[in-house]
Length: 440
Image 1: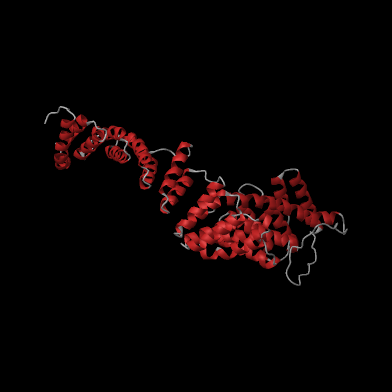
Image 2: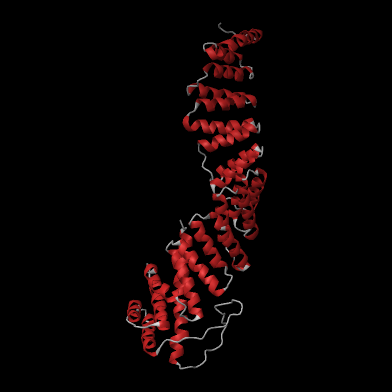
């Protein structure tokens, strides 16, 4: 469905348009009549129609009888008596141009009210069904009817009225094309989004260009799983709006969908350099991309720094991810550090065992013995193997009495008995050579 931001934008523009159109109405008709047939002052006037060979039609004015009531309605409107103004206009009996003019005026006033869109269309549509209004009024009302349809989520109707405005004016208007693209997107006619979105980009001045038409194209391609096309649009977004960090991370995400992981990593790294990584998912995404590109150590560093900065929560999953990254990069001491933190959360025996095993590999024997004992205390499923590892930790510290103690414990378990049988006499010889007493 239409996002809230777009809905609010259309609503705000519609209300401001009604005020502007009311002013136009009075300036071209009532005020002109009030002053007789005096010529309007020259201004920065832009023609409402730019079709080839266009010649302005004769300007119509409201008849005297209807004009007086219109003037009263306008005065009530200026005095912020909106309902009074509407009631005065509804009381007017008229035909032809006067009828169209009054209906348009009522419709615009009603549209300026909260929740007045539905009722306003009952007046605005008849005012433009047949070409009775002056060109500027006709064009503006066509656009207003289209905007109201869009605001009411009547998307096919919005497209129809926007196209009538385009046909009547022959104008190339970026905002109008963008709204047509929005309507097609909301109708899930994704293939039809691309054309008007491209026209919106083409005909919007560079200094007024917004991301919306690019976003509509992106989502339209994404919904159709056309990831390579989505990547091209995302690249255009980055080039056009380089200072907005979310487009860099989005580019990385679309590269990932297109399975171009090297470019995805480059996009994320550029975002990081420019300070655009802000959320936990940004840092998790960068870490994942380092891992995917066989840069495991960097994957660990990114998450570790993000946790230290308080950006990423050091929960069990993240600690495991950091530990695994350092493990894969063969930095056993760092991996062991984070396995230890992970294990401490739920007193997990298997993770304490991982920590102890890596500390053994890093030749940190005293710390290894401590971690492995925690694994035993936590109820390891491999008691023989863990006791053998504790035995090794003491053996390589030349603490043969402790080594002998744990090799005997290992021999009590099926998973350690065979290996313990080979180690035990070897340890005992060491103890004998050093005059260390022991019991069999």
